[in-house]
Length: 214
Image (cartoon, rainbow, N blue to C red; front, side):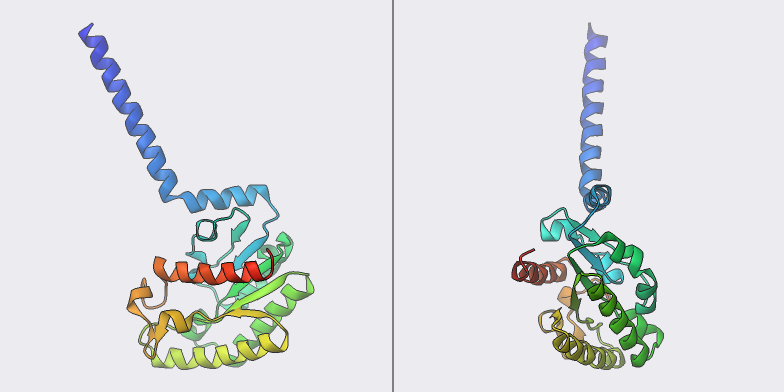
């Protein structure tokens, strides 16, 4: 009888441990699980397209909806976005695409002329396929005056282009940066954002979605 009770208690403890581990794993990887669900379901209404800054956002959770596909591409430049836009955006036929990028180009020394040409092509491609583009202006890095000057020039072009073509844009820099660049309280490292910054970004995206009734 005593042996049976010990076995029962051990079995119960093991089950509790396994359930706890399962729930913990599900919580840690919840965004990847959500993204798998969105991929299986197909036809996302929203595509997030950009570099690692986009890729690291937990957009299903941040936006509170399950029709968001995170197609961020860590480490890549706008040239790569152009090459991959058909499979990562166009073929999915979302209603809206949030586009972010440019800082990797600046880091590796791509000229403004080429970066701007890539953005033109990206936005033209998105629009001609009946998808609404929204540009998130390139965000400043921490304490890098040379990078900041390039970002200012690129964003000046993006604002002018968006106004000319009636494209909505989001400017995060006034909220998360100061004269030195990305503020430490919003930074994960020199370039990437922390959770506080993503919450601000998500709030701006929600405003756009509400404005466009999506």
